[in-house]
Length: 227
Image (cartoon, rainbow, N blue to C red):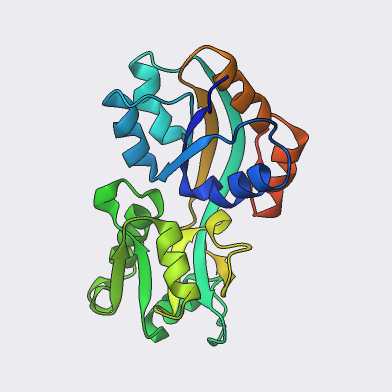
């Protein structure tokens, strides 16, 4: 069996890295390409060859309509939250008032570019508009290609706060999860693994994501298991 090809959303990056580095995979390591849900959807629709894609249910919708999914395995849901740079002052964000104040008080904020298909970045820009602080946040904001890159920049001290899925924040160096977006602005995104081709490579990847090791790795970074 040649090396499987996996397309994966940033929300599962930490879990995938732990699975592949921790001995849960046997044989030649898969070739893994990460991207936003929208970008992965478009790559598959454009005909990019891959065995399995792991992305949001929204990202899979068009692929399902196009008849490109052989089998789908729900993995769980991830909430959108704020990463806090190590050493920065923590603030309560469990209420709308506290969340709004934290965004206004932060010296700098990073988030993923909605134009690249980022679920969290698109939602965040809607939230700051709803909160009436769009101008203030944009003035000190930086857009990144992916949420995980915004979190990495936060860990390096380049921004004080970063917006991303909680699963892209928990366990990443130099940052902590300040908190999830509070209701009514909370966003929980469901993710699934989907086989794009028949064959041993796709089956091996799907078996990996259906394993107990995968469930543990997903839970460790904040995924709520699929029902």
